[in-house]
Image (cartoon, rainbow, N blue to C red):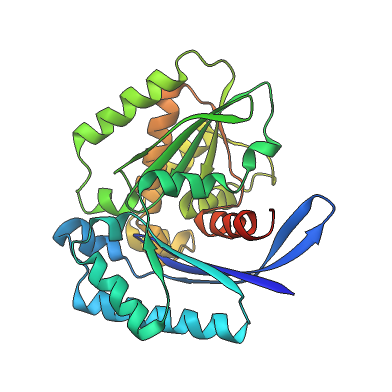
Length: 294
């Protein structure tokens, strides 16, 4: 049994996905074996102080040591560890990489926004898209939002913007970045008929689950808007109690919904499909492409 692992060091949480790789008639596929998520909130340090604090660095190193031990126990043969927006902004990012190599023996790569978008593409959700529709793919993270436009199942444009849930909570999102995103998205979708949305990231997954929509059915703009209004009318404490949200989800879910609603308004997208994939899945698919599908 082949096992691959993906480590995704995000601005909100750090994830380890261990996947079992199997050969099928169509090529190689994977099944999720183990998923561990640790809400470290590196973005709070990175976006406010432009550095990862000693305390957070210590927590991150301990997490990486634990992940390395788990990968060893599961006999993982290949892994890829990627850090996104928070580490891109931390001036001591290179120092963090060195320490993780020294103490956890994990090679970590800080990736640029475009590579992040490409890794998310590796999920090949376009294979299941309707050829008659065009799609705006929205991936919302803690530090950035990756947008891609698909026409005839092929990506025609993609861009990463420094707008994310932790960044918004910390008031570190800039008006000019919102404007840049608005101009970009209008320019790349204005002539597209039948435009639908695709949403990925922990928050839209949670919103979809809360909507009680059937798997494979889209989340409508109206439904998303009414859920947002409902969530926003409760305090943080109430969102944890009433909706059963984890504390590290209860705050970020609001700005995440705002990003989706804003983009849907700008583009006239009435519904968003929510495939249950993300960065970690993309990393596993990338490892399969690079190592097995040759």
